[in-house]
Length: 150
Length: 393
Ligand SMILES: [Zn+2]
Image (cartoon, rainbow over all chains, first blue to last red; front, side, top):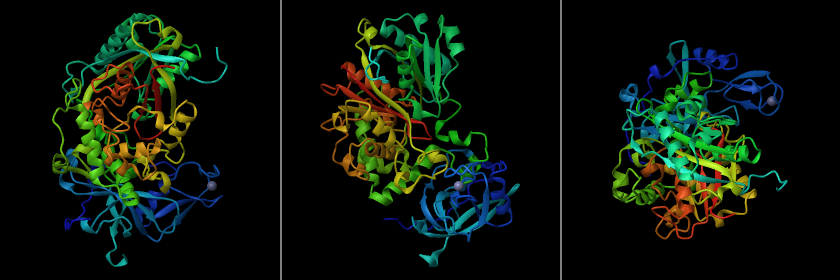
């Protein structure tokens, strides 16, 4: 059902992004800056949660284990942005916001972008691999399609 | 007086007022507060109530400054002023605030008002204007700058799971456009064909231009009072039968985190609202004569039709394709004023307005014999809301 579309998914502009953290989210971004993808796991009931909010929704514990993930993921859903709704986006079309399910952390999703991939290869269920885009103050985990893994 | 803890049929909408629906920015040099004031004055006149006698305000989506409205409109004494939290999800639920105020004796004459002016702030890019927070950086870093992009992620999941197609989205857009054509208050007056739909520019795939609601300015107000008093007033009362807001933890911050369980990801988040709304009413989905379904995006209309039980989960596409939502011959005519896709976007309040017109029997596209109308508040972060109005208790 998808038409051939050899365009490459662009990156949204860094100008849209200001890294703001609190004590709960800081470890996620610290890890990203070091090229690691991590997720918050409740120390008490071992439930993963993202974003890393102050309480575990299952047991209200505040104790978190930060687990390093393998960096692979499965594409859950995505949208191909074809029109710049803000001026800053004009040079970034098309870019692809996505929701992915990372391996090693059942039950959570990460909002991210698919980059360095042909639009025609971006289909639900595709296997993904993390990469880290440096930005001021850290790095953003994004994903690319792993072509041979399908 | 009944001792049941219920608002059922104990209050009524007795006045309706609105500004024109302006193209984005065309309402200037009026201010938003001025349009809100005009809608309130118009609703009071419709009810035959003196503006200074209003004693309650109920809002949603941040609301307005009650003190400022009170001063400029000369409203003597206010005993109730409340805003439903969240955004457009509260438009139907704000009527429940008004009903609760009246049933509990906190106020006698409550105005519910909503309005928008997008001259400077385009709602389609609103999430990009929110200050960065530790949680917002996750979606902001992905370039999710508008709700049309966020809901596109839900739309794709619905397509993947259930085989929903862009033709189904097109049918929603075309059915609602057909209601706008010829409607005196609706902005879009040109019929939409399937070819028109598929020729429209893609915005955030799978959402094209015609899957998005309009960008308009305007305000709508309604006056709510006790049912027994309503019968003595000039306008035909429309009774607030059932009204619910909130919803399940599964939906949570929904489009701002995308953490919903798979069973509810491709939905409108309204399933628990619908269950409570029907449970506290005399009606089920089969008893609804006409519905005003919050249509910020065509795909979300399909998911609400499922969540409100008009068809089974996943059957929303074939349901609309059957012609069911058409004013002309459908079993459940929806958005009979052209909705927010083709009539005017007033953050959900245009749906309340059209529901009142239908149940008074004065709508431009009148559904013959309509006695019940469902109104929904925008699928978004919680709370979301739903409302059943009826013409006779
Ligand atoms: Zn826990």
